[in-house]
Length: 83
Image (cartoon, rainbow, N blue to C red; front, side, top):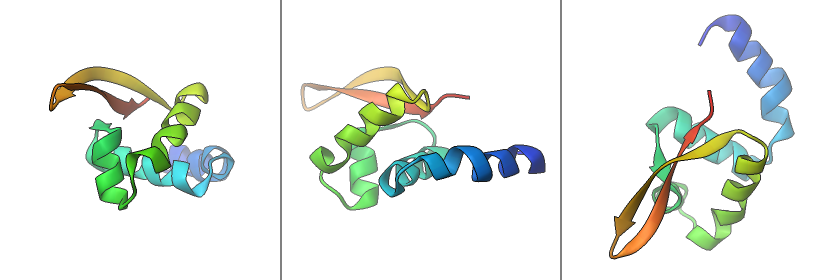
């Protein structure tokens, strides 16, 4: 990321997010596409504690579902940042 993009991100986009939303964005930046459950493990939270943040970030146009995978027979969305 170039210096100007980083500056715009830090000054305009990042402050408009809650702390937990910022944590999710950071995880996706560092690790690439992840499921909500993978994020919950990394954040040491239960999935129900962060699921609403994923919905909020989707509505804000910050993340999107890029794939659906199945774990133990249950569908899980894989999320990534919108570039």
